[in-house]
Image (cartoon, rainbow, N blue to C red; front, side, top):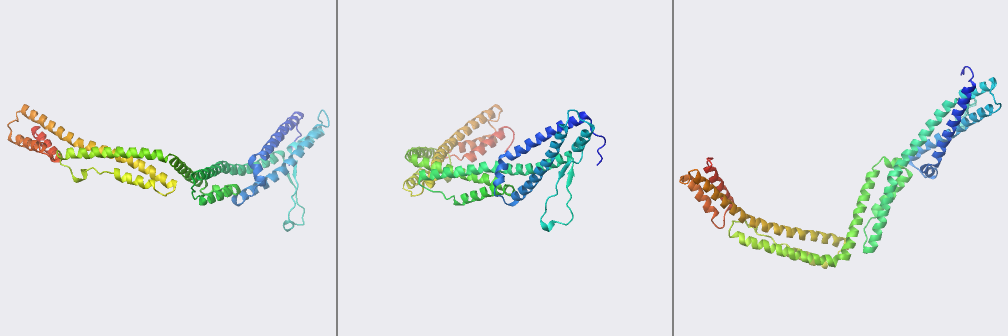
Length: 397
């Protein structure tokens, strides 16, 4: 390799300063790498699968990087020695510095090979320029940090969630002891142990599967179990009070259903109602469920669910009874509205000179008879009023 003329004194001084800064930066990066938490863990970790393969490649690259770095630093030490031999650089020193700083001065000794890979011919050392050495070190450094980052990303994403799952299980066990009942989580705990082992020993392989979605589902399930246990404990503590509230709520259901029955009795003589309009009472059915719950031997988890469902059904029954009463009274209001509408149409007919019109009078009488007949057929009456209104508006039947 032809280097051309030697460097100038200013060029040599500048190159030495730049290489010294470069050496310090590289040393800092390597120290940062070795002090990285994940790197420290990986040095003593028991790895397998894809992670073991990837980290083995990274370790080989790192070993080569350190060998190259030692050779690179040796060249710079020699260059600094040459520079320090005299205050003003002479031609021989400039030529030597040019060779060191610009030539193929970094020597990589041929590595000893296993006997089955050797030959009897001498193994040639490899020679690189400082720039080539730095480029090769950078490639090795990037290979190591790429593996480190990939592993660290999985651990950063998965380990906190695994810790959350462990905390959830401990919280569930505490709640079980307080409640005096146990939930079978053996399959989930086994799954959690397997997942943690996979994440610690082969994070890259674990990340290739449904790891994070599976952890999310597990956390959601454990959260539901914990919430149910907390609810069961609350029910156990507050059962007497909630039972009293439920008894009072059942009284309100009875009152609402009584109102609905009264409404049905008052309306059925005025409005023709189908059989299904008869209000259905649920109060006694719900009261029987409460009585069964009082003597139940079920676990508190089951009783908690049954009590919550009974409370919801009681509220729903009261709402349905109130709605039935409103709907029944609404039928009478509908009949009265149709009566008023028929009267308004009759007045309109008189203003238009149709009071003596035989067809209009017949339609009026038909609608009036339906509306003033008890019980009133609202469907037929509404059609009759509509027909009369169209007739006086010139629309015919």
